[in-house]
Length: 194
Image 1 (cartoon, helix red, strand yellow):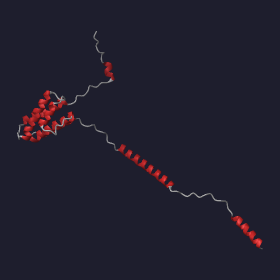
Image 2 (cartoon, rainbow, N blue to C red):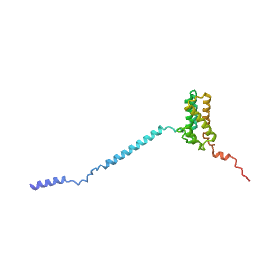
Image 3 (cartoon, rainbow, N blue to C red):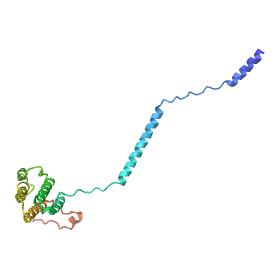
Image 4 (cartoon, rainbow, N blue to C red):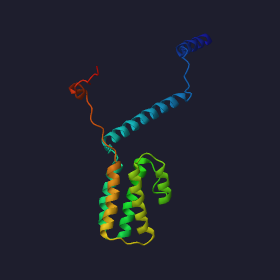
């Protein structure tokens, strides 16, 4: 009987024997790091693409800056509204002329006294001698109104306004003549001296 039981146990244990299982992979945590990094990269790309699309959709066209001479003429026209008030009118006209000269020729006109500015002006070749003299008379006349409490009449104020306007007109940049390849072909050849 003992053999019978042991044979039964052997038979039962034979059915119980299985093949060796392969090793179990234990996650190290690095997979989650790589998946997280990939998700962040995709998110960053999506945000970048969305912002770029929004920027293109709402992009405002670039407006070129207004040239100094155009802006000075506009301010001189606006100053005419103050012609009934000598001091504000003269301040507006002289400031317009000074800021124009600073923008056009890189003078530091608004930051200096009239004497300092005229001294600097004498050393430059950017304006003619007549323009320098006219500008000196203009600034000294403006100083009389601003600092010496002189109150000129409307005709004198219009002369000051005309001086400032003439300065702008005489010193504004002249447009270059348009040159195209077609113009060069239509020009006669230069004369040769024989």
